[in-house]
Length: 259
Image (cartoon, rainbow, N blue to C red; front, top):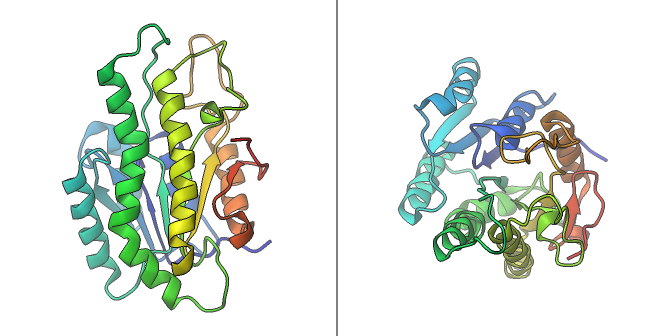
C-alpha cells in the first residue's frame, strides 16, 4: 500500500466533523497536497472559525464558498478552484457535505425529503458534473495506467444507513429521508463509475463509520468511532484502492458494505 499522494483535493462540508478532519489530515501528510480546497457554506462565519485558523497557518489551504444545494454556487466554486489550479487538474473530489433530519417514518414530509435528497444526492451529482473537466485533466496529466485516488477520483461519503440489506441502527433512528438519500447516492456512485471510467476517474462510496460528530450523536448514544480514527482509516483505504474497486461501497476499514 502506498501513501495517498495527491497534488490537489477538494473536500465539501469542510468546516466541521469529518470534513474538517479530512482537511487536517491532508495538511498533516508527510507529502501534503499542493492545494487543499475546503468547501463550506459560510467561510467567514463563526462555524468556520477553526477552518479559518488552519488557513492562516497553511498557505496551501484555500477556503471555497460552496452551498452544495445551489447549482450556481457549485459552478462558481468550480471556476474558483480552476483559477487556483491554473493549467492543472483536480485529483480528488470528496463529496462529504451532508444533512440529516431526525424524523420517523410517520413524520417525514415532502419538504424534509426534498431538502435532504437535494443536499445528499443531487449535490454530489452536480459537483461531479461541474468538476469533471478538472478531474479529466488530472487523469490525463498523471503518469502510469489504471485508476487510483492519487490520480483522479470522486469519493462520495455515504453511510451504511443507506444499505438496503443492512438497514444499520434502525432501532435508534428511522431517519428515512437520510437513508433514502444515501441509498440513492450509492446508485449515483455506481452510475458515475460507469460513465467516468473511460476518462480514468475512479468513483467510490465510503461509509465513514458511526462517527462522533454533531450529526452522528443520537440521543444518549455516543458513536463508537472518533473523527481521527475514521479519517485515518478512510485515507488508508483511499491510498490502496484501484480500478478493481471503482463503483463499490466500502467502509472506513476497507470492508465491502452490502448494497
